[in-house]
Image 1 (cartoon, rainbow, N blue to C red):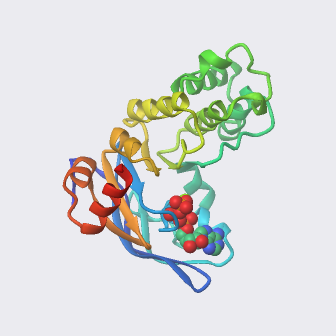
Image 2 (cartoon, rainbow, N blue to C red; image 1 turned 90 degrees about the vertical axis):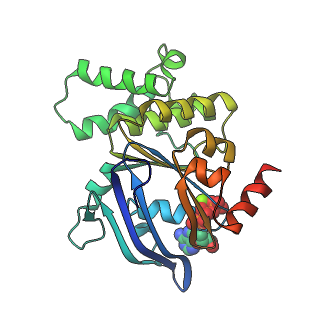
Image 3 (cartoon, rainbow, N blue to C red; image 1 turned 90 degrees about the horizontal axis):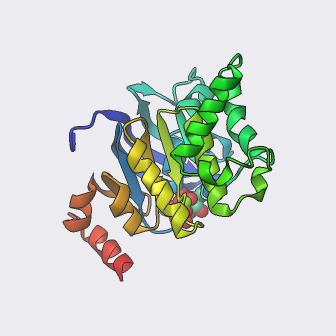
Length: 257
Ligand SMILES: Nc1ncnc2c1ncn2[C@@H]1O[C@H](COP(=O)(O)OP(=O)(O)OP(=O)(O)O)[C@@H](O)[C@H]1O
Ligand SMILES: [Mg+2]
């Protein structure tokens, strides 16, 4: 299936996942398109976070996790035995629900990963990347006078934008966002949405959200999960206006009320 003309970046084939005996994803097949924003919705506990975390092998860290099926990134299986997991996570960055800045300066929060990636980077070049990343999340104007201040002194919305800037700065190809705005004020939420829309041509975004308004505003493609199954997936406009499945319709109606 190719919807809307974007090339596929990730192909998931018959993915099933378990934590111990509990099966949380069942035969999920999905193509994620490059340079687009894919939204994932569904009720609590349906497996959205688990799905997202299989795309950069973060679930490997859960001791009881097990999976079957394939996740191909640019055609290469990320679960093949010799795969460099660090490299996978470098290519597939992630922003979590709760902002998690490092307890160091605003500048260093972003500079740390860039220095690690480019050890010999010149000061001026590093500064340019830091400033540019902060500009992309519309945080620069708010922090340009306090770059050496601890990131912990920022508000929650500012911290989340900093975390996003930190990910943007190391230029992953794909950015996973797990309910990135659920604890944020409307202004920071709008700025994060603006960033995704503006820079989707440079990255590929996959965003889990409970906010259907947000899904409609930003996503090009939308997947609806229920009880570990991908019930419906398509162009957002089609899924929202004309869902094929009764379950999707019920969920959408319930949420608009
Ligand atoms: N690390 C883990 N170990 C064991 N079980 C887990 C783990 N993470 C998630 N689960 C279980 O897997 C199921 C799916 O959870 P998941 O977090 O993927 O759902 P979700 O759709 O993201 O929910 P929410 O909208 O509440 O964030 C749940 O029953 C959950 O309890
Ligand atoms: Mg979740």
